[in-house]
Length: 154
Image 1 (tube, rainbow, N blue to C red):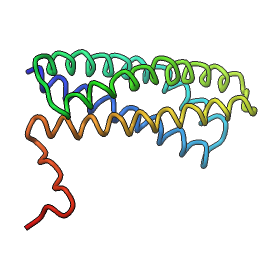
Image 2: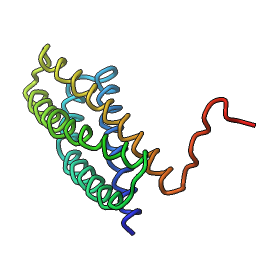
Image 3: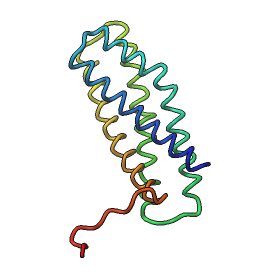
Image 4: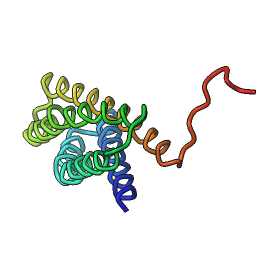
């Protein structure tokens, strides 16, 4: 049961960040400021109300599952988690809230786009790290076979 909860929370968190990232890029490229404002508001609420618990649940269940286990994959996952959490708490959440507030006031200036660029970079970093953790978690559970090393074939 704990493994299913962990997988569900991890997939949900990853999909939410991917959705926030894609919607931000698409609305900035193809929509008016009103649509940007709406996307930023939706990311802040209810988006963060879904994302923060999903990441926290992923971390808590992941640490619980890792207890008593060793190995390279577990060590890598445990090493990535503080970066994912720190990135979320220190960059993604505050950026989402500030950008939503600025967009609501019609503040689409250099500071808005600089902060949005930082948010997109942090989001991309978290997507990569979370994707690596998902891959390694699937390998640990046996749902994904380990990669074959180059040159080690028959």
